[in-house]
Amino acid sequence: MSEECTRFESSLLELAYDELSPALAEELRLHAASCPRCRKALEEVMLTRRLAARLEPEELGDEIDGAILGAASEAAEMFSSPTAVADPLSERSPAPPPTSLRRAPSIVDRLRSWMLTPALATAAAATLVFAFTFFLIDKGSSPEESFEMAARAPVVAPGRLADRVAEDKKVAEAHLAAARAEKKALAGTRARTETEDGAAKIAAKTNLSRTAAGNLGTAGPASVKTDTKSRKRTKMLRGAGREDQLEGIELDRAPAPELKAEPAPRASAFGAEPAAPQAVDSSGDGADYRLGMAAFDRGDCKSATAAFKRVVDAEGNRTPQAMHHIARCQKRGGRFGGALPWYDKLLNRYPRYPSRAEALLEAATCHRRLGHMTKARARLDELSRIPGWKERAEQEAARLSD
Amino acid sequence: MLLFLLVIQWVEGRPWGPPLSAATNTDEDLMRSFQNGDRGAFEALYRKYKNPVFSFLARQYTNRDTAVELTQEVFLRVIRNAQSFRHGSRFTTWLFTIARNLAIDSVRKASHRRHASLDQKTNEDGPSLGDRLPGREPDPDRASASARLQSDIAKAVSKLPEEQREVFLLREYHGLPFREIAEVVQAKEGTVKSRMRYALEALRGDLSGWADYARTLP
Image (cartoon, rainbow over all chains, first blue to last red; front, side, top):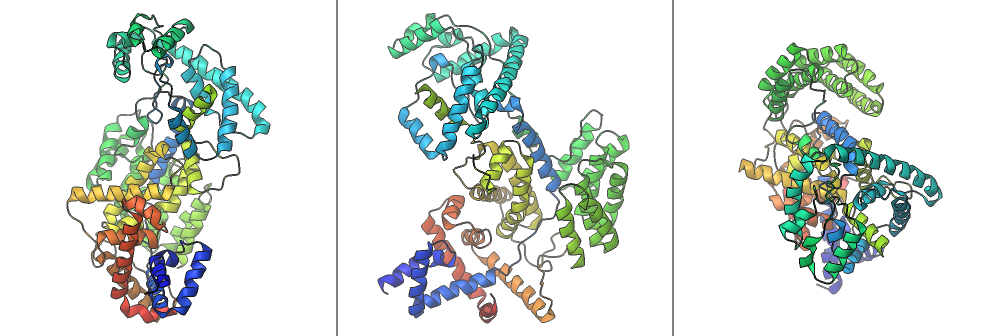
C-alpha cells in the first residue's frame, strides 16, 4: 500500500464526515479518483451513510414539555434575581476569605486562567465599567459586596458607558441600602452563633488557630469589616511571616450581611419533582398534590389519579394543575377518550390557566388519535392565538392533513 | 495591578455577559442568555434538542418509556447546573455527556440492559416500535420498501455493541465531530474512530442487501 493510500485510509472517516479542511479533502478525493482501492473504501462508507440517513429519528411528544419549561421559568427567575446574583456565598462562586487574610494569588495561575477565556475586548470593557462602579460605591460596603455588585453590570458599548455607570451607581446604592438593613436586622444572636461556625471554617482554611479565627468575628467568609490600621498591620505581619502575632489583633465583629439565598434552592426546587404548573400552596391540598406528583413521576398513574382527584374534590388552589395531571395520566395510558373530558373541564373552567397552551396541544393530540380531526383543528386554532404557539399549532395542524 | 487581579477574579468566578457584537444565537449564546435569566433562550435549546436527546437515549440504551423519563431528567439537570456551564466548552458535548451518564447510571441501577425489540409494544394501547417506523413516500411500493429499510436499519443499529453504537449514533445522527464524541464517551479520539470503523463495517454487512437501493439514493 502506498504512502498516499495509508494517508487516505487514516483520514477516511474525516473525509466521509466532512471534518477535513477543503484543501485536504480535495487532495484526498483526487487520490480516490485515481486509486480503485481507496475509491471503493470511500464508496462503501458513503453508501452505508446514505442508508443510515433513512432512519427516522425517534420523536418525543409533549409529555414533558410542561415540567421542563416550568422548571426553566423558575430557574430563569432566580438567575435574574438581584439577591441571587449578588450572593457572595453562592455555590457557583465560592466567596473569598476575608481581605486581611487573603493570599496574594499566584500571577502565573491568574494569567493562565485569564488566557484561556475568550474576548479580551470584553474583559477590557468590563474592567472600565468595574473601575467606575467600584470607586462610585459608598466606602461603607465591603470589597466583596462592591465587587459582586460591580460585576453584575453587563458589558456595554463604550458609547453608553456614562449612562450605564450612573445606572449602576443607583443599583449599587440600592443593594447597599438593602444589605445594611439586613445587617441591622441580623445583628446579635445569629452573629454569635455563626461566628463559631465561621471561626472553624476560617481556621480550616488558614494557618490561624481557632482562637485567632474566632477573633475575626465573622458570620461567614463573605465580609469582615476591618479597620484600616488592623488590616495594614495584619498584612505586614503575614508578609513578615509573623502570623503567630495575629491573634492579638482586634478586628471588628460586624456580622456579614445575610445576602445569600437559601442553600441550593435551585437544586432542591427541582429535586425529583418536575416543576409541573405551580400554584401557591395556601390550601390543605398540598399533601395530596405532592403525593400525586410523586406517583406521576414514578409512572403510577392509578395512585396519581386518585391523589389528584382528592385535590380536585377539595377545590383548592391546585385544582387546575390536578385536572391537568389527571388528563395526562389518562393520555399516557392511551385512554384518549378518558382524557378529553378532563381537558375540556380544565380549559372551560380555567381560561387563565398558565399551562393552557400545553393543555390545548395535548387535547388536540387526543382528538387526533381518536380521529376527531375537526375538534383537533378547533383546539389548534385556539392554540395558534396564544403568543409564541402559532408555529407549533401550524405544524400540528399540518400533521392532521397527512 | 490590583485592578487587573480583580478583573481576573471576576473572570474566573462568573460567566461572561453577552458579547459586544450582535448575538449569533449559537447554542452557547443561548445558554449564556439563560444564565442571565432568559427563559426563552432555554426554550429554544430545549425545542432544538428534545428529540435528538430522546432519540439517542431510546436507540442507545433503553425502551421508550425509560427514555422519556431520562430525557426529562437530562433537561432538568441542564437547568439545575446551568450556571456551571462554562463557555469554553460546547453545549452539545455537555448535553450528550449528561444524557450518556444518566443512561449508564440508569442501566446500572436496573442491572440489565433492554433493547426494545421491534415487536415489543411500547405501551398498552400503543404501536410497537416496528409499527411506528413510517414510510413517507407516496408510492405504495416505495412506502413499504422504506418501512422495511427502516426496520432493517434499526435492527442493525441495535445489534451493534454498545460502544460502537453510541459513537455511531452521535456521529451519524447528532453531528458531533469525533473530537467531541471522544469527550462525551471519555475515550481517545483514535479509539472513537476505530469504533466507528467497526460500526460501519458491521452495518455494511447487515445492510448488504440494500446496497443497490443505496446507490439510487441522493
